[in-house]
Amino acid sequence: AKSCHNLRIIDLSECVCVSKPSPLGKGCPFLEKVILYGCINIQDTYIESVLSLVNLKYLNLHGCKRISDTSVNYIINHSCSLSYLFLGYNKISKTKLEQLRTQRPDINLILN
Image (cartoon, rainbow, N blue to C red; front, side, top):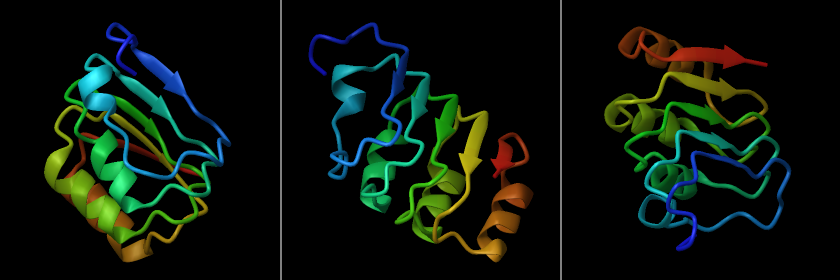
């Protein structure tokens, strides 16, 4: 990621080797769109790392089966620039999704 300073979009869809937290914020500070569709090994700690991207506007977590309410809590409290969030097929409760909708109406939540 050190040589990707101007990278704006990264698509890691269905990449099973992605699991540990990544320093994307340090190497790719201008990332706006992160697609993690179907990355079944990603856990909440990875999402916290991704949400440290200050320019992040679009995040696709559909099919990230290990993502839980912990990630939604972090989104509610820390992701200021996020505009689009794709979720589905994970461990996030309906109650937490409603809380996200209520507390962060600025985020377009797409559930599949």
